[in-house]
Length: 227
Ligand code: NI
Ligand code: MN
Image (cartoon, rainbow, N blue to C red; front, side, top):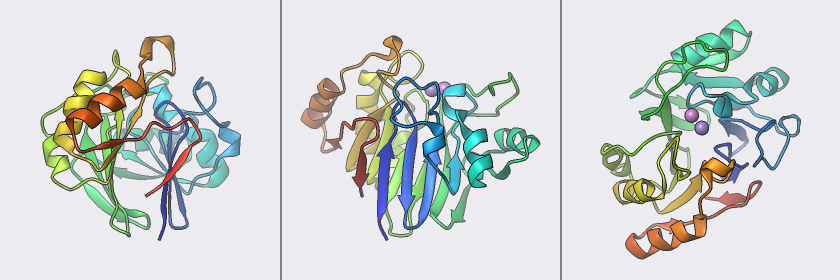
């Protein structure tokens, strides 16, 4: 079974696990960094880390069109169900076996109000163990936290980490995060979407690869990686 990761720009991710198409935080329309329009993508499953507009994104449009199953915390799922979407509610620390693998919600240090001001519960990250045993960690929007070491103890093949600073970890804390997580590969995200999030991912790559065993992959929006 092949697992293929795609970065769509900002914190918008795609993952194809066998025949299952996942989108994580599908923010396309209005995303200055996006490589596609929402109308051009499809999803069997949509995973949402938290309620911010740049993460809920185009969930409503895509999920209605594709009849996707939306997976998030129980508060965000309740909000999506009010809009007639199909959901699977979970919460931090809990995992569930889906057709695309065992998915666990992890903590994230951030906020989570929904686009209409509704209560979006606690923000989360996702730890996925695919059927072909690939371990992938989507940190979501978060600051650095020491328990990343416990997530790293799982033995990660790939980590998706924000480096944009201001709203999330910046390059310095993301370097410490890599030291705790010890993934085989890391892809930086949540940077250069707007002026406020300006970062040099190649400078960050040099630092990481000088100080850790982790390989840094700097993708262009729309670029994919087979795991
Ligand atoms: Ni956010
Ligand atoms: Mn964000």
